[in-house]
Length: 215
Ligand SMILES: C[S@@+](CC[C@H](N)C(=O)[O-])C[C@H]1O[C@@H](n2cnc3c(N)ncnc32)[C@H](O)[C@@H]1O
Image 1 (cartoon, rainbow, N blue to C red):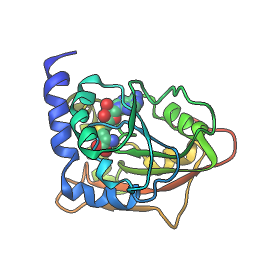
Image 2: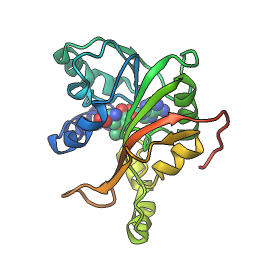
Image 3: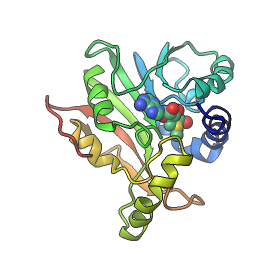
């Protein structure tokens, strides 16, 4: 692991992801977490302040040990019970139907095989469980989308594998996770460059039994 991924990226990630103006978008999503909870791509723990006070243990999946080190102080400060699984979301070691809530925020952009990860999310959710998501992704504006596609190779290099151009709603649908239209929101975030500022959020539920790959 190079100096950039071990030292620079975790600090950049921590500074960017704990920004209060992003927290505004986290709060209404995390407020819906209930029961047994799994968070994938935990990062440095920027969601911790937004979980309801009454939630119990939170299982987290985060493959990157250097990022995990930066998370430790946020976990300790939160006073929450967090069980860390140092692994990737494409293959989860949990039985089917283990969780009431799975959370992903700004993570679907970075998972190499996002379709496999979403299939795992659907598998580990209870049939009545809920997937809470807040993600940046492909803009509906063709001009912005063109720039997102051009810049993604560079962004992947400097942003820990982050893609700017993932079609979040379509990926969920293709993975058998049906977004409740009443909860779905997609918008540009003010004062963020539009190539990174198209945020989608909502609640999705497991549907049916098959999934197809979109990427
Ligand atoms: C942009 S950060 C977001 C962190 C956090 N979810 C947040 O909202 O602040 C993306 C995270 O996804 C993690 N990640 C990358 N590949 C992953 C994978 N295959 N499975 C699970 N997480 C992964 C990265 O290590 C990183 O912590």
